[in-house]
Image (cartoon, rainbow, N blue to C red; front, top):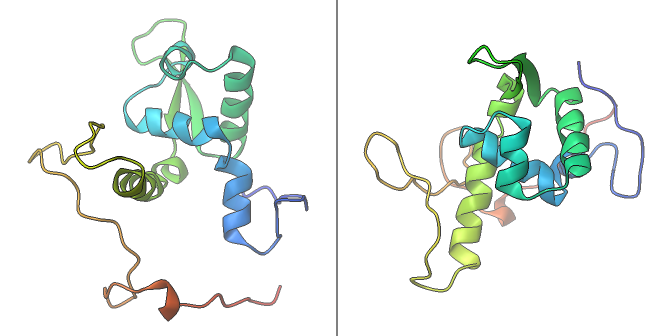
Length: 152
């Protein structure tokens, strides 16, 4: 069940981008999701990898669990720890993370500047560029789209 958001300065109630930013738009939430895609599961591993304050991480993980992005499970190795595991809803953020990564690779690094790269684990090759496409699979440019506001 989706929890309705209250109206705030950053939330336009009918705007999906504003709602997504309200949930994932701070520095830490998207990096937590990124690390989960890289296999991080435990609180201490998120904290040490990100260098985030314990209280901030606690708050972000709580919000992400409440939003259905993560679920908490007992540790898979039988220890008393718990793990934060991406749900199907959380897994569906993968294209968002990939698109953001690819945009940053293109625009925030100097030519030949070293940076991490996401590759296909089978071939070792970089992923193709994420691009919006029509229902028929044709790449579409921003000027070829419009926002259709649906009545409540």
